[in-house]
Length: 196
Ligand SMILES: CC(C)(COP(=O)(O)OP(=O)(O)OC[C@H]1O[C@@H](n2cnc3c(N)ncnc32)[C@H](O)[C@@H]1OP(=O)(O)O)[C@@H](O)C(=O)NCCC(=O)NCCS
Figure 1 (tube, protein in one colour):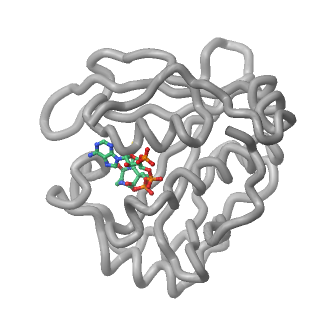
Figure 2: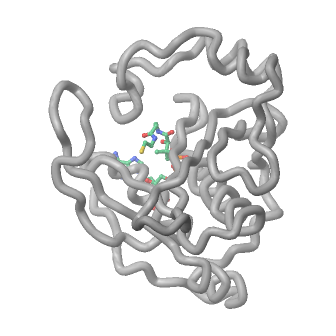
């Protein structure tokens, strides 16, 4: 795996009001979005953020961006800081949600690769990570293909569907990211392949 992220139909960008209309018209549902439905989302919240100019700027350690595929809105990525000690040196934890029609075509992998590269390029953090439900095989596979290392299972950490669930934690450090990006054409082995 390398970190050449410029080619391809996927890009990250700020939200537009047109995106907000699509997002409000296609909220997560328990049927289609088992792993990202935590209750009814507040309609208009994204639009309020866009209208108030609440975009992430360079260096922001929390934010949300639109995923675009071939010029069309396809979903969102977001990130927030996660502290591992009393000194202010957080890691960044990210998440993703694609519209059902955009899934299973490699776009999630590419969007997450772009986000990792963006976060290392625009913040000073040393570590970027993502956790996902132990049953969310598509996201585990996608994170692995995006170059993150499967680090372990965090037990009972994730409240969803009325119970605590186990999560798999994936991460990549800045030195490992730089090494992967420098190794053009070299496959980075992450040590995990999801079985179906
Ligand atoms: C999870 C998500 C971001 C993945 O993005 P995607 O574009 O659909 O995934 P990709 O096409 O890039 O790759 C998915 C990989 O998982 C595999 N996969 C998909 N569904 C699978 C399943 N049920 N079991 C096993 N593997 C599966 C695909 O085959 C592919 O691997 P491959 O290239 O080796 O064949 C996207 O599906 C999504 O937004 N899902 C709903 C929200 C969600 O779950 N977000 C993450 C919450 S932590």
